[in-house]
Picture 1: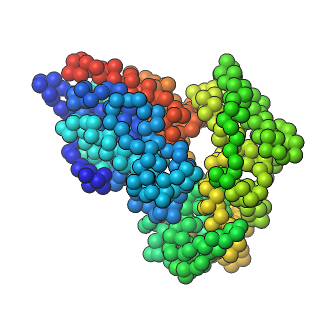
Picture 2: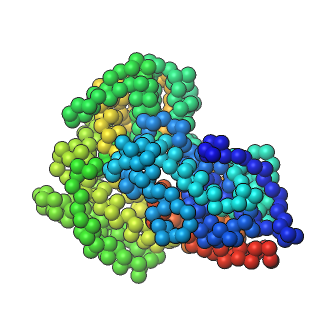
Picture 3: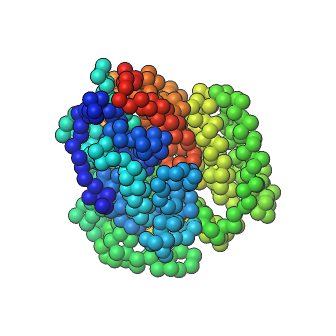
Length: 555
């Protein structure tokens, strides 16, 4: 049975088995994070006892496991910025006796064999197919009578003496335990600054879902388009409006050549507050360095654990990353570079707004380095060091590891490192550069005046709502209003314990993912090895539910 045809069952108000009421668990949101919760819970509890627990998954997207981000129906020109060899839903649990699926590359080998190699940045839609298959594998662990998928958006979650209540489109039902893994809550565009951006023009359209929002019926051929943002979402929009409309990119050196389809917009103007672009992810043509090179720097960061709660981000932590970048360039034969040189480059990058030519040159340079045509430089070394040391950074910063006055500095640097270290694959940057060089795409800053007489046929908002800007129509906003959830003052993130439980809810409500970003760092990833709180939650839940049919827990 395909995920698209997975039956939607009625939601039970209560379940009784042999005169004893079953424990009821709800997982709200089933993208990759919700799928991880479902898999970890099934493994921790074990197949023998799963029949005694009712599990209901609420996921409005058509493909549980994939969710909105990895929707298998999205356009194929939208690529991952995470290479195939790093994606393995089962990697951490290869020794588990539970039924397992394959790594992404193994799965590709018999589905899309031409893509089954390392260093590939494949379409997100294909990764969505893989995650959907993983969901099918996990769902088979549950008895059909104890497991159901409800394709409804949850509007509200609240608690009283009888348990947790979930209101969704079409009804309300009750549960003993609830997990929120709502992620982006529908890929909503950010409204922050939109009034200034639009300059009194018509309201900006969202980019997602790209298939409908960027269709010719919404953005006509030959139109002039203004896009707010220069991040991954903006690049998705550009490629959807060009390659997604049958435009073609022909191989050429050093950049591809764009062949017009005459169905694309006449002009696409990208604008952001800073004007700073995303840089290209390196390919396999950039010779990797042995992993033991990073060990001294990892140990330096690990030694900072003794200072948790007092860590100074720039002087204690980021200095180690900069030292690693300087040493990396030295190992690759570059002219002597010191940590101070790395810091000075970063300061120049982050402090000033970029004009269009400087932004284009930065992307062109990163593309040359990423494809091995140009020698390694400071942005490459800094990005590579941040990527390789990121697990240690995550451990140090999460759960209040920094001094309270250091989080603004961390947020600032982390935002810039998204551009420097976690940008799109070189292939996508090459396409964007080709479109700029051929006049299809222009760059600018929101602060710059618009061209005289310029009005745009369509305005797109390619800035996604931040992790601390919950949807008014979603459960997190209501729980904040009710005082159930507490924010961490320095980061504004939702506070949880190390098992993902919300303090004060007696281990009955857990939250994982984007809403906790800042308190828990590094949520936007497919990796299951970066954090262990989902496994901790599952282990605790296995203990709590061990006496299924006996006394209720948590109330």
